[in-house]
Amino acid sequence: MQQDLILCGRVLAFVASPFDAAGPEAAVAWHEALAVRAGKIVGLGTRTALRRAFPEAELVDHGDRVILPGFVDAHVHYPQTGIIASWGKRLIDWLNTYTFPEEMRFGDAAYAAEVAARYLDLTTACGTTTVASYCTIHPESVEAIFAEAQRRGQRLVAGKTCMDRNAPEGLRDTVQSAHDGSAALIARWHGVDRLTYAITPRFSPTSTPEQLEALGALWANNPTCLMQTHLSEQLDEIDWVRGLFPTARDYLDTYEAHGLLREGAVFGHAIHLEPREKDRLREVQASLVHCPTSNTFIGSGLFDMGGLMAAGHRIGLATDTGGGSSFSMLRTMAAAYEVAQLRGTPLHGAQLLWLATQGSAMALGLDDRIGTIAVGMEADLVVLDLASTPAIAQRATRAGDIWEAIFPTLMMGDDRAIAEVRIAGRKAH
Ligand code: GUN
Ligand code: ZN
Image 1 (spheres, protein in one colour):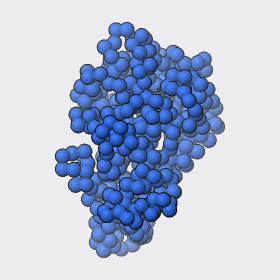
Image 2 (cartoon, helix red, strand yellow; image 1 turned 180 degrees about the horizontal axis):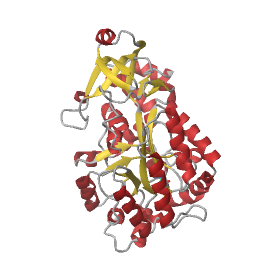
Image 3 (cartoon, protein in one colour; image 1 turned 30 degrees about the vertical axis):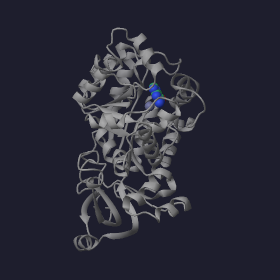
Image 4 (cartoon, protein in one colour; image 1 turned 90 degrees about the horizontal axis):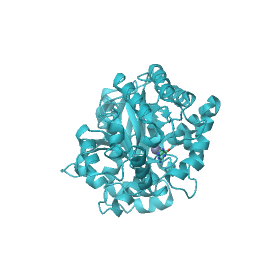
């Protein structure tokens, strides 16, 4: 049994969405301390009150460090860890040149296990406690990441990436093997410990209509699974989809027509959306995932956070490793800020932190368990040092308030700013 724990510091708790009318700062309540018992948050308040309520607890004092929910990265490809930051290609040739050759290696269970462990080490060091990952077509790649997350007691979403066309030999499954392979992995992993299965057609260009249909049927039979895929990332890709699905009304319709659009659908990128697509996505409350370092790195475009949030969309934030150029959600928040600036709608620090925690948790339907600090939530926590480098420290000392003190770390921080990470209350970093 884990010993009770009290963490003291500047504890940030969201009491509302910082995108709501009351304003970003009004969405946050600050506390002196939180208490953890058996992996869950059981108290929030003053140090004295929690000491009185939990007299036997171990007390860790983080001084003026900020205690946040662990970061939730809502769209990643863990098999692309080894090819992150590959130079000079756009989406389709980037996939063909770098991604597909690397993904071909994941039929080797030992290689998959080694990369899965390396990936979770790297992301934990960045303060990320939950990811939603694509795997490869190989069941071995799914086994590897679920087994490693289970060993660490970590909450994680993953699924076998399905592709039965427009991918090289050795990286294609079939209608049947995509369905049956995914079904077997759902039976083995979905809902086990802290693990969630996401049915994962890679994107419409690499699935036949028959494969999309089979995965839609699988989702109908397994409604508590998530469904993750890509949508409207680059203009060339959208043209390609139009050619491959001549009767579809738009890109989203290629999913909708096959039972792959409802709440629980998680669409990566969603940059170049048509009005009908936006309306349908909002109506059904499907999730959109903003991947800003990827969208700038592969040259995809500028996600419309301001417009989509104001219209009532459900939106999370993600690295999209390895199309994204970082494992760090701090770096990702900085990129989200920069992209929003280019669109003329700057994001407040509270909004960036919310997107990286509760927003992403909501996008994955996990916000009743993770993504905010509140009694009853799972104790996945990150402790931020607001003076982790000399450059950040000299700026932070001039801050007039807490948000001015936090912002330099959001813009300039990296894994050095992550003072401590806890997964279900246990120290993970
Ligand atoms: N579209 C289809 N597959 C991928 C991928 O692996 N990365 C990105 N960024 N976009 C995709
Ligand atoms: Zn992706």
